[in-house]
Length: 131
Image (cartoon, rainbow, N blue to C red; front, side):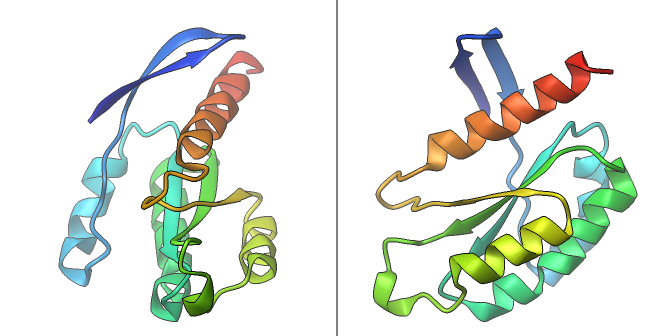
């Protein structure tokens, strides 16, 4: 998917966005898709502990492929308040450990989704401008 982000301080930005499946069968393809990536959104489901536990693998794969390119941790499904199993505190601790920002979102309601893309895009641009 290609998405345009209007960022006042940078002008219009185009981004290619790849959604990589979390299933084990896709693991061997990750490195191919990660090549050339300037950053990544690492997403977990706040209602499923298993997705949170798999984050270390995703972070490690990304860092092996792309070094210190920016990562943004996203906890999704915050609209399901009564089913949340991973707290913002737990997610922020993991994010801090890996020098990432954290944003909680709801794809269902759209809460913070665009903000997450814009934040990662700004981080990538700022990093590249300060080289």
